[in-house]
Image 1 (cartoon, rainbow, N blue to C red):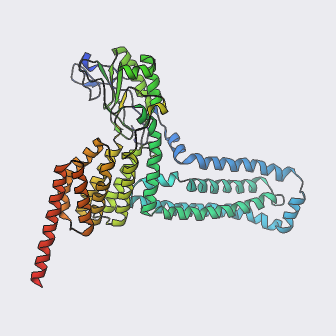
Image 2: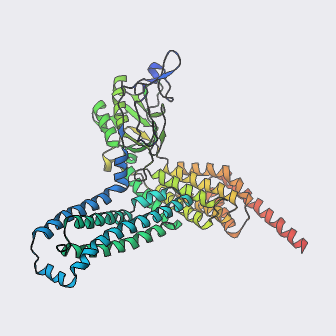
Image 3: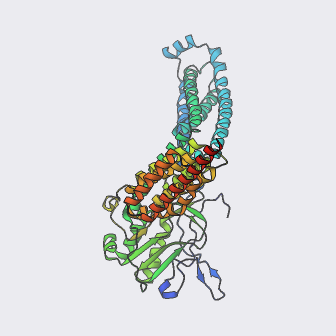
Length: 510
């Protein structure tokens, strides 16, 4: 299969099929085993929804420019008959007195050719600028460029105005194109203003603060899109009895999960068990989703597991599970908040590494991760009743853990590049945010810190480092993580000892 094709979970391997309790199939792996030990695929199973490249392109960039171009074509279809079939009124005669026909005859061709030339040169330079920024920061710069309304409006306006002028040249003589020629001149002035805005937006996009701000905005918007799913699902399974029949649902193709439709899952549960609310309370059936938004699925990977009910009910429900997933050839920043986290983490890593050495940019990226952690790690859980009621579905979000993991990665790379101020920023971030996290996320952060804090000893104990280490030690101690606090205290003592030894050596030489 070509990588350029959009993918979805293909026909699941006999999966939506067999109960592990009843037929002994594994809950991970992919398909049903045959007598020869091979795993066969069941190609009669339903497919999930498929996101086509065209729909992705329209949603990401093309819709607004095409709408603007269509508006220009409609405007042209109105202006041409007006110029051809209406007599020259007083308004047109007044315009003709100020705008000579000879000027109009040369104006429209000049505007059309100038627009095409300026657009081709400007857009080529802008693409080179965006490519350079993307290679320095992260690939999300491309997403930002495509999704910016200013860019979409400017490109659509340039193309639409060029088509308008070319149509007038083709259908209207220079002696008649008085009103339409003046309109073209005014619209050209608007296009030049948009060109200035487009150039400024491209330059502004090269600033780390602008890149981080836009990534955060995309992350917050994607989180809002995800809220109905998070509100209606639970994070821990309730049907854990080994005697309960289970049916795993497998992937049959490659692809990134770009959407999970909670409403389709609710309808599937309602069709099998009756009322969704009754099913959620009584615990007759339960779906545990292993694939999350942004997950890259491969052939034979488990998408979900259905527990409870009869085998026939589980097989029927497996169809709804598959249809609830939408896969694509790339992740979608509009629906996947984890994608924004990965991009911020990648940006922080790249700017904080030895190869780039941009401490200021790395600090901006770390602060962006801090902002996401504050928003997501301290939010109250959304009410299920506001989004249609609870569902017997297990879905582990993992967004907070992903942000923590990105900060831990930056702590590691700052040690490699000796950027002590970046290291101090990360340590200070943990010292500030740990008390505000829920216990599960807090324990995850403390365990992660315990493994990487010893590497901090390779830095120099500057004033910022001492303050950050002291704050982190106090926070961990106050929260009851005494072992991790002792690790931090040991690193502080080790750094202090190294600095004292260096100072004594220097004094002895002097």
